[in-house]
Image (cartoon, rainbow, N blue to C red):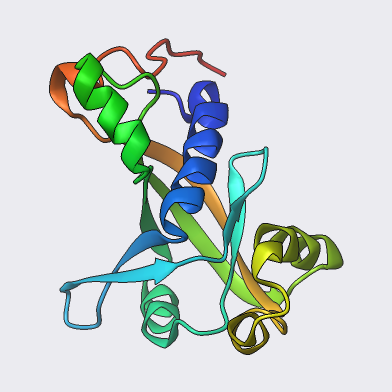
Length: 169
């Protein structure tokens, strides 16, 4: 499937996933070859099949990326009403989950636009102790270039939700 044809659906799903569970799961490869999974809240997708995340806390993730910059990011819309309606209807109206594959770049200082996008996303928590501890001083980001995606297949419940038409460049 062509990632470009499905990018808006992917971005919408990532927004719904963040609203419902406030993080994404980022899979990497550990030093010993075993899989590593890290929850990341500070991931934002751009409109050009790229994204960025704030690289302030994930030490093991950063070490894994230094050895192998390839990642797989899982986003799941965990909203109970969304799942409840799909169970009643026997079909999801929109995709419930997706895996996004890409390559992570070097860490660099966040731009004012990146900081503003993150602060807008977590604005509801502004003024809390947790906000000040976790998010008030986010400054380091990594860019991700996405090149593929894998829909999460739940049989007939998810059939026909992704554009399968290929366009050659």
